[in-house]
Image (cartoon, helix red, strand yellow):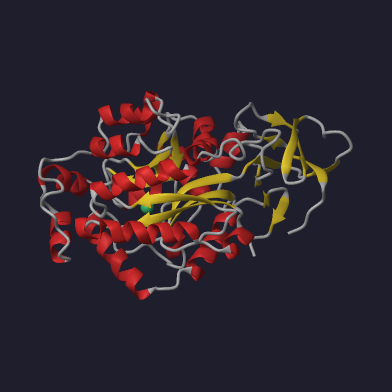
Length: 406
Ligand SMILES: [Zn+2]
């Protein structure tokens, strides 16, 4: 990395995201932060002309599991049922005790794809090595505990883990999913998150098999739990739905509902009505990998949900490129404008993580996390130039420093 205390970057287009694009725009940076965004440099800042590039905020990957980043291809086969895929994940985790290699590989790959902020689900504490590569990380410590008898021990172990993360990280809690976390444990975790003012992220309404388990106590997830001697008939005896979990999550200071592929309209409105603290993370290519029914993106946007974007892990996605996700959206959802698609991958992700005051757009006072993508002059707008292209970013800046991804 290299740095100068005050300098300005000029590009064919500057895309602040929270305000209109600026042709020939200039972003002035001083001491890690943006001090001005406009058509000329602030005060005496030396200007570096980047040429035919679009300069935009670093992308926000709101959901991933970097421990799987050394996988060369997703586990299993496309369109496989989620419960079968989960079994492959469990087997893979047993083989790989040390997650450091996956972590560093995943962070570097993310940087190369212009990602500067990540919402990571982790099974062990994060140390300085991660921050040295990418400093704007939120690390949700994952919790799995389905048996009522283990609630106290799982809770105690999590508290230990929360203490062991590097102090510069934002730390959160991730109760894994309804089929792996006892509802009483979930409630305890949400209370803990409130006491510590931490965000919570939970996989919810991801597959039809999950809904079948909650409402009818049957199906492949029931069989999986039976086979592992983990089934507890009391949990879903009266039938549950994702709304029951949303109501618990709504008590957290901030909650990210991961996937939400099968949320009902009523449940979508429940999240939208709490948009100051609840959001939904859509993982487009992971959703496509499992061949689920069409994602209710338009309905969520119409309802006013804060939708952010995640790659999920390389166990269900070919890579960790958030740009790849946004480009997939641009090709798939012709009715969603390029402006909105870029918003999902930047400011909405920052809002979901509760850090929109410092990242997610180009504005004075925010951290100078930027990425620059080649601008094809034939494209009609800078947003289209970013989304209808195959190019990886030319350069990315982390807190005002050029990141080299090494
Ligand atoms: Zn996930």
